[in-house]
Length: 181
Ligand SMILES: [Zn+2]
Image 1 (cartoon, rainbow, N blue to C red):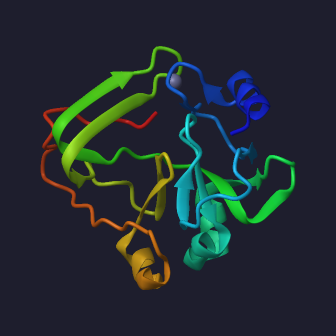
Image 2: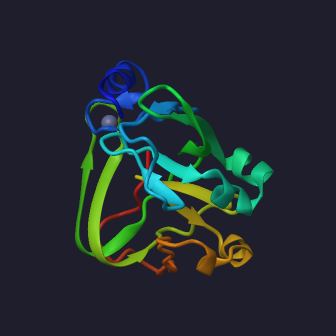
């Protein structure tokens, strides 16, 4: 983000303790430093945890469904021109993608968020709530149901990284149940 936008964010929706959107964050507009983002379907705005997406990619899940699950905001170029092909997104349902190795968690003293890091095999624990088909895993990562992935033509999106996540019987990182917020 450009500096004034970043400073504005720090005064409002951005937690200064962990550089992530606060729990009650909804739509976020962002003025970015580039003329346009890299041509990847999903990306992130560095330093604030917010994802950005190409609209045509995101809405291939169904625009109504996406708007039910994600708060969408506008992306602007440095000259304040709106970049109509892009949106920012903040999930109504956040989730932690966990890993099997080198896991660590730090609770943010300001907003209470569990900031989690791990490597190795990625998984979800516990089983995510039913009835939610799109979760925000932070930093431009979405967790969606297998049914939604089947709706996508994965080959149509260059630089899209899609990983199948398992739900083991017990967490493999030695940690307990962790809430994203
Ligand atoms: Zn925080």
